[in-house]
Length: 180
Length: 182
Image (cartoon, rainbow over all chains, first blue to last red; front, side, top):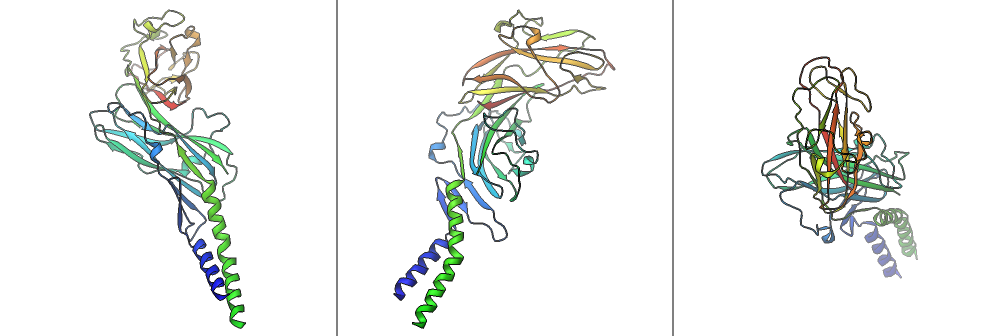
């Protein structure tokens, strides 16, 4: 009987003390000691590898769309964007949050404060000729924020600041968020 | 018997402390997802510069192959620049512009040129006529091309209508084409 109880306690302790778990390439950590946030770090799995080889001599970004599902204020969602400099010279890029020009059907534009909740690891990277670089993008809405739309969209803009002329191009990645 | 009671109490206390946090973690793990499809977004625009030189008041200037008004509806041969979707998926393109800077500057207006106010419009192949072109307003993005397939192209032109001038200082403005996954 005693052994059974001890075994039960050990089992409960083992379940309660799990620090992290991996689910389909996504790592979710327990809340930090001074808050109730979870950290969700998603890494592209093998299936996320670009199937069509992108051109080396064209500037591109990837992915075109990121879907965040069942998000909630207090959670932190990380993703990595890939940026490629397709020019034979170094290029400085400007990466920033952007209010979308339009949204997917059923999605609304983001709250004004969203700009403060999107963190880009490096907003002005300088890429060497034909360099491909990963830049982390984090969505972190503070715990307790109300009135967040159920389905909303924001964009991450990437502009090559070394472009010449007065007709410039901008590449945007669309981030679609579904709230829990 | 006393020891057994002690064990039971300890077990109960541990269950009360540990089970709720375990359940919360499990729910979060199951619910939150971050996914992306393996696509890349890229585009080219063949003509990056429109240099007009000296311009006159109250005059229309076309950015076409001939520098004159195109046939209506607009035909590809008259268009000045070509947008190519060099990404891996269908893309949408929007366009926006900033007011002209230099000296007193020129403000973009949607319909009528005026004192230091100009109209800057863009149109693509197939556009019915000048009136059907998109008139660019300061920083307001407008849908320009929708659902252009990968490797697809579309040709476009522009029109500048000047008003009256407050000074003779050179002016410049930037037009930005934005590509997103459809």
